[in-house]
Amino acid sequence: MLSLNNNNCNMKNLIFFLYLLICLWIIGGLIAIFRSSSDLYNLILIENVYDNLTIPICILIAKISISSILTFYLLKFSRIINKLNLENFLSKKNGKSFKTIGKVFLYYFFIRLFINIIEISLGENYQKLIEYNTKGVIEGVVTLLITSLFLLIISKIINQGYYFKNENDLTI
Image 1 (cartoon, rainbow, N blue to C red):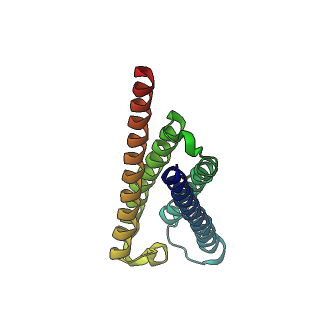
Image 2: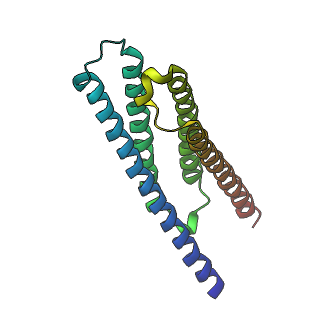
C-alpha cells in the first residue's frame, strides 16, 4: 500500500513538471507570435524598402499562423494534463490526447523546417527574417522532432496499456 501511494505521488510530481514545461512552451509560443507580429509590423509599416516584400510577409504570416495553432493545441493539452485521472491513466482519451499533440508537433516540425530552409535560401537580402544561424535552425527543429516522436510513442504505450488492461479485466 505504501509503494502504491509513493508511485501515485511520483506520478503527480511528474505530471506537475510536465504541466510546467507545457506552460513554458505556451509562453514561448506567445513570445514567438509577438516577435513575428512585431517583425511583420516593422516590415510593412516602418521599413521604407521598395524591394519585393511578398515572400518575407508570407513567411511571417506563416510563422504567426503555425505558432498560434501550436499554442492553441498546447493550451488544450495543458488542460488535459491538469485533469489527468491517475487512477485511470491508461484510457483512450489520454492516448488520443498524446497522439494529437504529437502529430501537431510533427506537422509543426515539417512546416518550421520548410520555413527555415526558405529563410536561409533567401540570402542576405532577408537577413532580418533569419532567427537563428544554420546550427540553431537544425537544433531547434530536431528538438521538435524528438518531442513529437516521444509523444507519439507515449500515446502508443498508453493505448497498448489500455488494451491490455481491458483484456486483463475480461479474464477476471
